Length: 119
View (cartoon, rainbow, N blue to C red):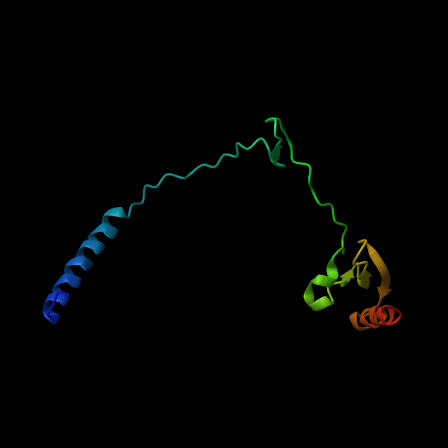
């Protein structure tokens, strides 16, 4: 371990600080060129390559309907949403609207609770 006095520490820190400040001053400039962006990807949907090396468009796409899997979100109440001014209950398994036309979220929650109590 090297013993350094407080005065030596201060001198080292000051010398580093002045070098840093000089670098910042040098790197500041007003004549920056605008970067241009170009999107060259021709495989927007992705690709798959089989064992023979054949390249095909990616086809393993999950096509979920609105509301499908909603019970896994928002503490299990993600199946209740406001749509076109009314509250609806989405079908968690199949997607789409299970029941709709509720005036309030509370009414929709009661309808959902009633549905679950019948199981």
